[in-house]
Length: 153
Image 1 (cartoon, rainbow, N blue to C red):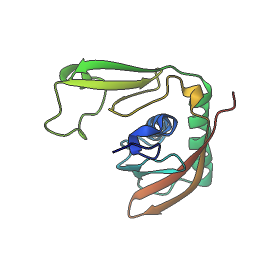
Image 2 (cartoon, rainbow, N blue to C red; image 1 turned 90 degrees about the vertical axis):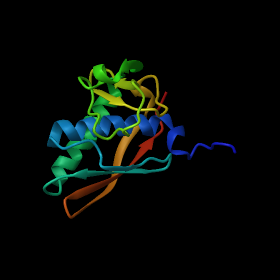
Image 3 (tube, rainbow, N blue to C red; image 1 turned 45 degrees about the horizontal axis):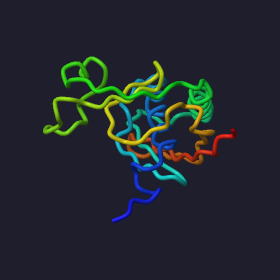
Image 4 (tube, helix red, strand yellow; image 1 turned 120 degrees about the vertical axis):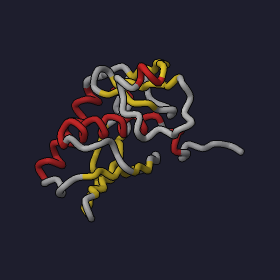
């Protein structure tokens, strides 16, 4: 079986953008990282548990913050730490019970750290421009849909 570029794990720029979006939401709204995520090359979506729909100004601020982090050209690094050490760095609540004692931590500069097995870019500048294309709010869940414009080299 051949993996293609549409496989969830196979498009590093979008996957790394999701990490930055998650941290931006945590910082701006104090909410958990995305409850449900669907990452693809053409467009992606994330669901966040919020008390109310973000205003147009807040949506613009989310987009601006994600793009500021991308533009900051932060290194994306991977380290392996014990589950005990990881508990001080990341939220382990979403991990399966049978997860190994060593976790792979992906960091986007000093901005975000997350336990993740996916593929990522080496530097945030490789992501391109982040654009929120639509969003909706239903029963305490804010769904945001986004795209990336290819980076201009």
